[in-house]
Length: 354
Ligand code: NAD
Ligand code: DAU
Image (cartoon, rainbow, N blue to C red; front, side):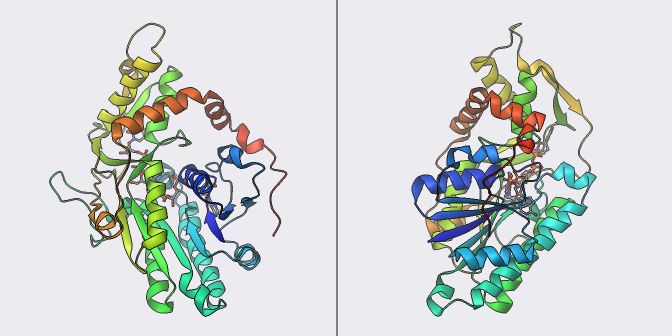
């Protein structure tokens, strides 16, 4: 048995692939364009593992996707590949439209063509699981109830608009063609292998480098944080038992203002790797201009996945954030490679051929 994972060299995708192969022997074909966010070093532990086939390529490359599907005959496609950073989407929305919308369209179109050629049993067993975000629901006011799966789509950034569009395409492929799809909408992840452009890893890395810790606006924007390994277990759970055509919200019941997050990171670093001058890392906090169109609050109501599939997060924020800070302290080489961009120069000589 085989699954096709896209974007499996990124933050969540690589955690997913590593966890998957720690749990099962089912082969993973990993299609990743290796953009700035895709890092082969994330998968170093699988370098000589025949259960992992890494293919550099674009989800929008129909010929490549078609050939991969024909060759490896996966029972499922899990689409993690995306441009994922809101700030980058504000500076340059084009690649977000290209990968998140057009790319998802090309991928699901090839998946459909493959699926219709399967025999009845394989068609029934096939799944297309689309990994999406809570940002498609827009922004909540302070007392609003958390997002449920029926919340109206109100995306506010080019990133979230492109993810919303891809969700709609996936939904339409189920409704129109009967493709067995599943969609997950998850809150903010954190954990190992997180690219230091996002809040938590940026704070950890900047703090140690003696750089400012940029807090946008008043720092009171709220996000709902989930440890990445819990997101991965939720995706496995939905793949295993999710009802076809359904969406499942995934979250950690863990809303926190950004400033609290930054304080927590500083306090953990104060404990685990104090500054040479014994001052607190909190002194490095710098309030900077707010993100344009900044969503004020996200919160996920994760009762559906718990009720229907029995999934709950295993990690508390306290345990997860401690593990995360410790991971960055233990992996300075990974941080150095990411910051210098040297991982991109690393020549992957062993890419699979279709
Ligand atoms: P990431 O930016 O770390 O990784 C994205 C991966 O996709 C990279 O390996 C990149 O090389 C690859 N990629 C980009 N364009 C591609 C293309 N055209 N073809 C093939 N591969 C391509 O992102 P992430 O944080 O790991 O997010 C993964 C998925 O989860 C995304 O779909 C994102 O929208 C969703 N998501 C992320 C979060 C979060 O907090 N990070 C939360 C909810 C949902
Ligand atoms: O909610 C899920 C989403 O979470 C995912 O779909 C996205 O892919 C992922 O990037 C993330 O989006 P956010 O915009 O919430 O994450 P980010 O880490 O960029 O920012 C988190 C919050 O911290 C947000 O309110 C902006 C703020 N922030 C961010 C950075 C990078 C700062 O205050 N300073 C910063 O330097």
